Image 1: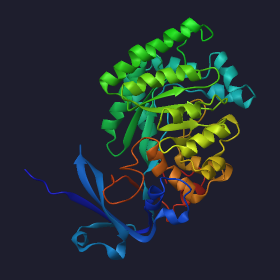
Image 2: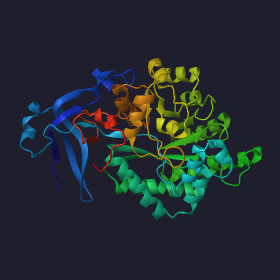
Image 3: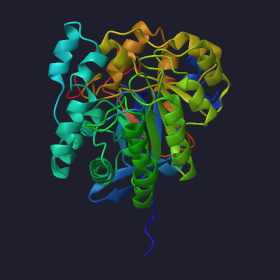
Length: 423
């Protein structure tokens, strides 16, 4: 039986920001003119019902309310009465959403002057979260992850990346990725991208100073974990933490090469704690993104600027949390790189689920303009996940991923620092 498409009509938004000009520039060197700001705007979406929820599907029309096509004028509309703005759904393209336990003790030590690396050497850091996550059941992980995802949704996030990496054994990495898969089914209103990060650290008990132990761990990732994750269809991408004390440039390239052979898209934790030139590796391997970049070199910046593929994902919440120097956003943007922003939500270095708070830090400390920030959490974030062809802007034919703000202007999203998602 044929069911005609259903539509949702939203009228009299104080403004609709389409971001169409940002797509035209591939997210680079954007200006206010690229925001596609429509005053007294309207949006028409096709929708369908999924398990009792009305879920937006595609954008059918966008423009001034006064120009709403007649074919939609008889549909009962949601009237925002000029009090609320509509923007593309925010994209949080780097998170570690699924984990158990907390690292409040680590945080207290860091605030007292102990370094991230020293905490890790004493058994804290990633290893602390790995222990807690390994002990947690799948149901426990799903419950906490769903609460976090819903909090992000309340802040306007509609597309979310979730990394594994707190399991480090095959069984526990698969457990985390299964939780992400369950979230996709439970939250059809969100677009969730899964990333395998089995190379987040070496498993507890491994002597990372021993070459053979390192080789054994990497063989487990390359020969066992990656093929099994691929067989089960549990991840879209593969990521590696290449940095001082973690995986070397050569080790990272070996893991990513195998991942690419298996058909995963690639991502890279790059040049965060030290400069390893891993940003250049990300570009060389046509990774979707190089993330962190606190210690990126001038040659790394130039490589990103020349790349049509690799996005520079900046995580200013992490630098803020670690009291570290921020990534060189202005140099990257002026060189012509495509720059995205994300929360890096994780229990150790950015316990923050609010992408708007990250936008505030970017405005104040990365000196990013409103257009650059808007691009960074919409189109550019989508590009960092390889879905910019259908997400990140409000244009006819795109997936209907949008957020109605509790404010009349987009700028209030990050002007109001640390606003409550429950407002």
